[in-house]
Image (tube, rainbow, N blue to C red; front, top):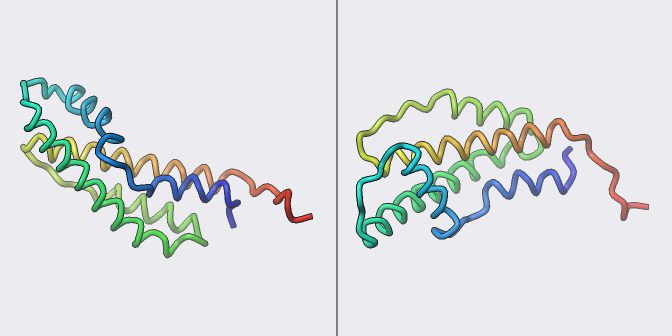
Length: 129
């Protein structure tokens, strides 16, 4: 079983992030995808809020699905890999494209955290003397 510290890394992937926490990532993704058309502040807030809300929903759903593998991390890794392999959504709507890009990035980060947790040996608990 993974150490408490290493499991905190995975748990951190599921932490709820407020809109302001996503703001810069969303903005950079818009710019990276070439979406430079001007938006009013209210349009930007509306689109960014929508993307943030969709990410919250997706992450919460995946948290409930994946935590059944908490004591079998290789199975959790495989489940995330299956999710990634089966992604095939497309859209012409820019906010959905940005959402898909950020969602996919989150899945890769989660998979990396799981891999790190699997590959990092469990350290003895110093308090258990």
